Length: 184
Ligand SMILES: CC(C)(COP(=O)(O)OP(=O)(O)OC[C@H]1O[C@@H](n2cnc3c(N)ncnc32)[C@H](O)[C@@H]1OP(=O)(O)O)[C@@H](O)C(=O)NCCC(=O)NCCS
Image 1 (cartoon, rainbow, N blue to C red):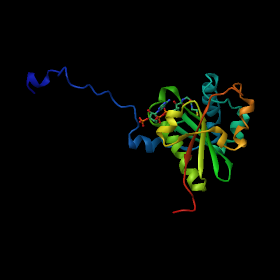
Image 2: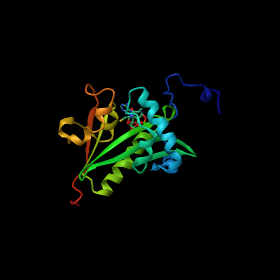
Image 3: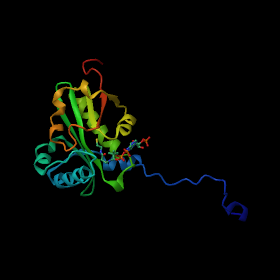
Image 4: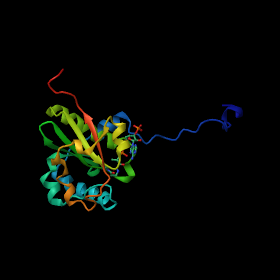
């Protein structure tokens, strides 16, 4: 290589390595149904963000009782992120307890976890998914639209009564229409 070629070009755009997961890494990690061994880490992860006011806290008992709602992304034995898909009614389910470890954020894991919920909700024949969130822009990127929380059935307020922010909470309802499961 000549000296001319090896000299750095000051006007060249310096590309920073992407933190996004490559397809092979994504398929290796994947979002899988949580197991009993994940429960403690799910609890700790959710409650770390709950302490910052980002989401509702969960007791260990709630995590165990709802463990079959949870998906996790795991690397070896470490839970990198979690989410729960909770059925509310015949046509409605909630995406809740979504959290990705701080040091693993912006790699596509949050999207991977929500996608697992969307797939299962479709497979179950649900029509609508919603999330109550302080991160509406994240959900908007995944196709959710903002909705008036009053259009959601009262049942979704169940947990709000025990939230420290109730009744002056400013969580935003984000909704994803999954279409009519009876239509091709
Ligand atoms: C919100 C959260 C789950 C996102 O997880 P993540 O793994 O960082 O998100 P991803 O990397 O999958 O991002 C997917 C897309 O959403 C975007 N995005 C991520 N967080 C965002 C935010 N807060 N606002 C707007 N867009 C966001 C990303 O840029 C990415 O867009 P791109 O595909 O165009 O690059 C994560 O930041 C988190 O755990 N936050 C703390 C807990 C919390 O607030 N949970 C939500 C409670 S409902």
